[in-house]
Amino acid sequence: MQITKFRDVLGGVSHRMGLDPDNLLDVEKASLAEFIQSRVRQGWEYYPWPEVMKVEQRQYRPDYAGGTTYSNAASDVDSSQVYWPQENKYYQALKSTSGNAPTDASGTVNAQWDDLGATYAADDYAAATDYAVGDTVFYPTDREYYTMHTNAGAGTVPTNASYWGKLTPFVKFIKYEQTGETKLGEIFSITGKNPEANRAPTSLSYSLIDDGILPEFDAGSKVWLKFRPRTPSFTSTLYNNTTANYYVGDIVYDDGSSAGAQNTGECYECIVAHTNSPARTPDNTTYWRKQEIPKVISEFVKQAAYASALLQDGQHEKGPLLEEMALNLLYAELDKVQNQQQQYRTIFTQPLAVRVS
Image (cartoon, rainbow, N blue to C red):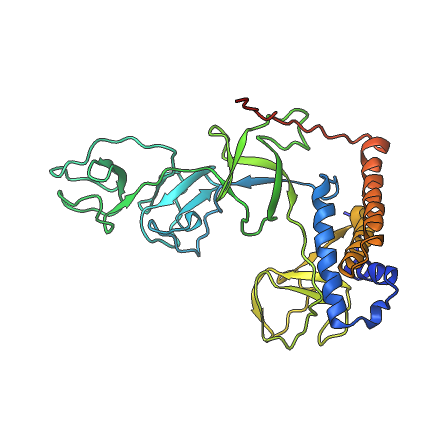
């Protein structure tokens, strides 16, 4: 993606206002950064710009990790359910476990785990039966299914977590934020195959739920998403290596004027919390992610942010005219995509039902 530096956008707005970008007051920088943030979001979400869109394969749960402790009672599904590449399947922990893979080399499920399924079937629990590890029962008392993970004598009820693990129905959803993956913004399609490598990949229906994206029930173990990432974030708050702690989600600006700055002229988001001992400068991609302004919307952002500044200043005659000029810049970029390069996107809409009384 071709980008325009945040510093250049900030400078472009400043020059339009007749200000020297190298001598802005802190309050002026803060206001302009806020205007830029708002206008980047507007331009970013105006159209599925080809250079912004991403296509990525996603799975419903993280890969099993040998160093992670999993638990049957975990409130977060990522702490109790895993994807196991060896079998291309999903499993759930029956008890607290670490370092025990879901299956052995031959594919036999280990005692600490069981298959993860949308539904389960088993005979009712019988108190007189001496169950073995791996046996699954239906417990009529709470109408739940359980699998034994540790041998116990007959009469040990399934709700005894020292010997049994409760089975959870598998809801195949994709979190909006998955560790190590691009944060999801708007979803444009879900397919079973890579749409960039297959002429006619099968489209899958999906629903947006509170926890994430829910593909249709028959979707495979992995799916491909075409989506727009979340709008990047910008600020005038300077990076400083004397700051004791930076936390995930913190945004900083590196303009080269503060201690330890690299003078990149860009904003960065903290992606791994850290202290300043030692300092991790914004160019360290392990701890920071650069926030990029696509070139395709940069001129719109400069002009529109200028319009916002004028409107805030009470210039209600000049502001709307500049707003219109800014939108024309956006339309011109859209024309380049659609008309000049023949990159049309068809959008299907469902007509609203109108009730006549």
